[in-house]
Length: 218
Image (cartoon, rainbow, N blue to C red; front, side, top):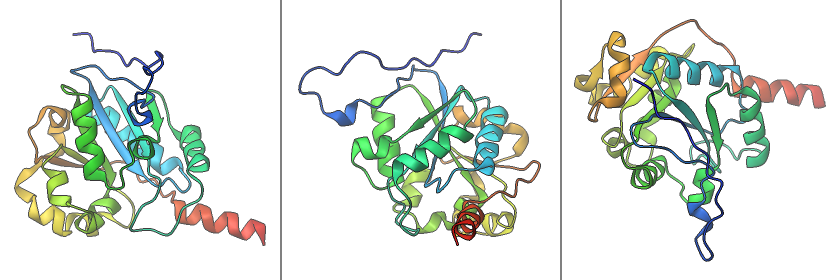
């Protein structure tokens, strides 16, 4: 069965149409799309590894990297444009780098997800995150609501796997966890549903890259 293709929005928005509705991409019903959010401060090979692992194991049509304007749980990041550029350098096709949260004027992931689901009915969205994100998920705004909005794919990360699997979110939704062998079913599952995917370790981190850049400047 031939999969639907991604089409990019090229037609200018009608006069008076809010800028927030011009998202820079268009999706077709039936597509299986990963939403990979983060500060990407900067993006690195570990992010690309997580996105590619999810795309291949879940059978996704593409992964959209959502570069957040500001993560409330982290220090103030560098300019969004610089972080988006680093994501473009790391992302592998088929991927889309988006500042959709800035365009929509939203701050929290759960609101972003709800708006995208309303904008693209029929698209099978999956939230993609690393195990370090799962470990901190209970600190996110309405994290229980997020787990009930769309399936979630968690990618193993060095030093975070045990914390992620023992986190409040993992325990709260233990009954909704799929075996890794059923990962391709995840995009079609009714949430809450999540899967934990392991693979070769990738040790790159944004913190280490920022420390390296700082050392070079001194």
